[in-house]
Image (cartoon, rainbow over all chains, first blue to last red; front, side, top):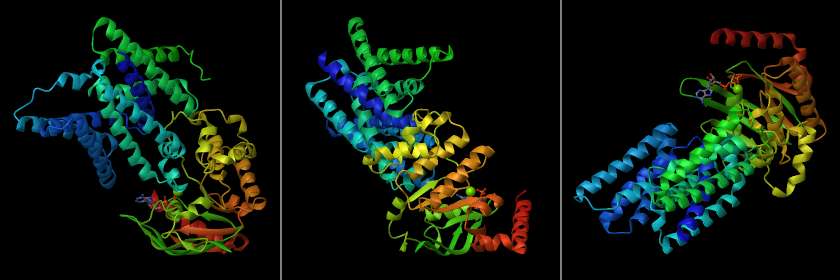
Length: 262
Length: 239
Ligand SMILES: Nc1ncnc2c1ncn2[C@@H]1O[C@H](COP(=O)(O)OP(=O)(O)OP(=O)(O)O)[C@@H](O)[C@H]1O
Ligand SMILES: [Mg+2]
């Protein structure tokens, strides 16, 4: 239970920070696409007899980078490239499963997460990855923010925008596969997008918005895990419902005209 | 000293030749007004000068060095784009946006100073997406100025802005050029403004029609007439 909470909080912070950049780049569904491609990776791991999370990391990151490259080279729109990535991951997974005659994997925990069963090793890995990614983001803060705000101007001011873009995709890949344990493949986007959409309505400056988003995200995850523990249901659903509740509440406050940015 | 040296610059897009064999130089302290009708190739020229488009023929040198060889020259340039594009609800304040341009964190005080100079210090805590066109333009000039550039490149920045803000903007440009000795390269449709502000003029309409001292251009009625007719023709052609 402690492990679940600790890992959950780390993942909540990670997803909200990485997700904020994705949302602002109109890449909201990218998390989903990577998550689906990790399905192919997991199938591959099971087939090869390797720990499936490792192959999931490998396959997701590589395919995300490849699709980004293709997108740029052939000038494919963001949403179309996401659709390609998303479906090819699932397709590869299905073919591998078919070829191997099917396995008895715990597909349910993969689809919906299994944070209550997280091991000590996994917890350590989650904390380490969260720490590393946050450090990278903090140390390249201006470059990442500027290239998210306007690529062309960032380029003119000498920022290596393309490298930064690949870095973000790379970090998003790691974040997604790490978070599968919390909410599973199907609900990843929720963690990336909902707290950020909510926070953007409150925050004025960038740092303020990021902090508000993190707070919402952590709140949803902690309350979600505790609630699901008490009622013995999967945490993924409760976590996402709570964050949707926060979003709905914010929209309500906003349309009632009560929201003034501080 | 020559700041920019452009020789035989040609830019061919799939459907049009946007620039054809354009050559000119810009010297230290010049205030160059580039005039030309819509589609004349002004933004195309800037894209090549800023290495945003590298598919050009000819050479562009900044500070004596070919920009294909090194991108270091970009550190000395402030650029204000024709249309600053960004997510409307981007959660960033004016202060955040100006700070993005700041290469050296230790120049923190510089930001306040520049916001004051451009009359936007009172906006520093407002969200970027909530500003008016004129305010936005000054924010982007501020951002272009935070690193003390030697050259300021502005692409046609007064469209859709009220007269008062335009006057303010012009007086800011004049001050930057005369007091701070910043070399300015500025594209505009406004012949009168170019006449008043710039000391050099380049008339562009795919080819370079005239380049030289601004008095020379504006005192030569024949030249001005020729230019207006050429632009007019181009205009008719487009509609
Ligand atoms: N990326 C592009 N691809 C293809 N053609 C282009 C591209 N950008 C500009 N053009 C074409 O090149 C020509 C010059 O365009 P450019 O934008 O440089 O003109 P401009 O002088 O900046 O015009 P305006 O005053 O309207 O800003 C136009 O015919 C335009 O259609
Ligand atoms: Mg233009």
